[in-house]
Length: 257
Length: 257
DNA sequence: CGGCGACTTGAAACGTGTCAATTAGCGTGG
DNA sequence: CCACGCTAATTGACACGTTTCAAGTCGCCG
Image 1 (cartoon, each protein chain N blue to C red):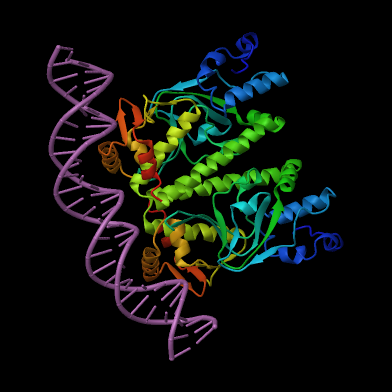
Image 2 (cartoon, each protein chain N blue to C red):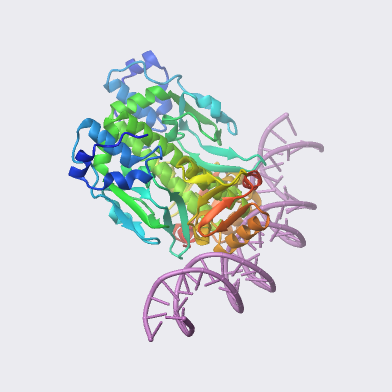
C-alpha cells in the first residue's frame, strides 16, 4: 500500500519512526508520512522531525500558546482536543483531534493559537518546525493540495459546529457529534461494523464533560440525553467503547432539521 | 495615498474600475486593488476581472452554490452575509461581509460552499476567476501572505463565534457582535468617534432578524435585549445608524466572562 | 476500608422561545 | 392624497429546554 522508508536511512537519522507511525498511516492526510517520504524523495536531510515523538498521559496539556512559537504538532496516536477556557472557568472545545490530524492549519502561518491542546487519552505526537514544514509544502504541490484540503475541512467543521450551537437542540448536537466522530474514525479504519447488523462500533474515550464542553451543554444534561438515547435503543456505551445500534434512527435524531 | 493605476491602461481593458474601487481601497486586504496592481506590475493582461462589477439590491442573493464553480466574489461596497438555511427554515449567519472582504478564503481552493451569500444593503461586488486569482497568489508572495492572514482571521472569527454560541448569554453575544462589527468598520475607516465623548458611531444596516440569525437567538429576544441596552444608556440605534454611547460599559457587558 | 471522580436522577430556577396583539414606517396604487 | 398591505419592531403572558443544586450510586485505587 504505502512505500515504506528504507530502514537504513530512517534508522540512521531518527530511530523508531517507522514502527511508531504504523498506526496512523491509514489516514489520508498523514503529515508525518507525507513529510518523511517527500524528504526522502527529494533527498533532503535531516528529516524535519525534531524528536522521535512525545508521549503524554491523558488529561495533560500538550501545548500552550507559548509552546507553539515555532512548533506545529501532529497527533500520531490517541485523542486530543483544542480547548479554550473562559475567565469564569467554563470551557469550549473547538475540535477533537484524531490520529493523523495536524493540530491546526493556521499554525503553519502564524504562532498565535488562542487555545490549548489537551490530551484526552494518552497521546503520542510529533512536532514539526514551522519553517521547515512550510517550505516543504511550498516545494511539493502534492503537499500543498493536502494542506488546502485540510484547511477546507477544518473550516467546514467549524461552520457546522456554529450551526449546531446556534440552531440545534441538545439531542441533535450530541447525536451529530457522535456521528461526526464515527465518520472520522471510519476514514481512519478505527470504527468497525459490529456483528451482522448495520451497527457501528468504535473506541470512545470521551468523558461526558468532554461532550458537554464540545456541545455547549452541561455535563448533567449530557448525561440525561445519553440515558434517553440508551433507553431508545439508539446507542450503547460501555467500557470506553460506543456502539451505534440503530444508525438510521440515530441519523434521524441528528437531522431533525 | 495609493498608487493609482494609469487611467490609459485601465480604461482600455475594464472601464470604471478606478472610480468604483475608491471606496474600499482603505481596507488593508483589498483584493481588487492588490490583484489589479499586481497584474499591472507583472504586465499581465487582461486584468482577471470578469466584468466591471455587479450591483444587487438589498435582500437579494449574491451567489448560490452552483454559481461558484469558478467564481470568487469580493465585496466592493455594502454589507452582505453568508447564510445557511436549515430544512425547517431556521437560518444561521456564519459571517458578515464588509467592503474589501473576500467571501471565503476556502473558495480559492474548492467550489463547494455550503452557504448562500446574501446582500444586506445594496451591494456592489466583483467576481474573480478562481484559477486566475489562485495563480496570482502563487506568483506573488505578498499576495500569498495576505491570503494566509485572511485565512487566519476567518478561522479566528469562526472560533470566536463558536465560543459565543456555546458559552455566552444572549446579552454577551449581541454586545460582542456589535463590538466586532464596530472594530472591523473602524479598520476600514467606516466608524467614527462621535462628539467629544468616547462614543463611537457607525452605519448599521442590520435588521434585528440579522442579529438573531447571527447570534442563534430569536428576533423577539433580540428586540428585548436591545431595548434593555437602550434603557441602560449603552447604545442608541436610529435611522440605520448605531452609536455606542458607553464603550466601557458596553465592553463590560460583552466580556462578562 | 475510605476517598475520589464519573455518572445518574430528581426538583426547582432561569433564560430563551413561542404566540399573540399592537404600533410604526414605507412604498404602491387607486 | 389617502387607503392599503407589507415588513420591522415592541411588549406581555406563557411554555419549554436547559441549567443549577443536591443527593446518591458505582467503580477504581490507594
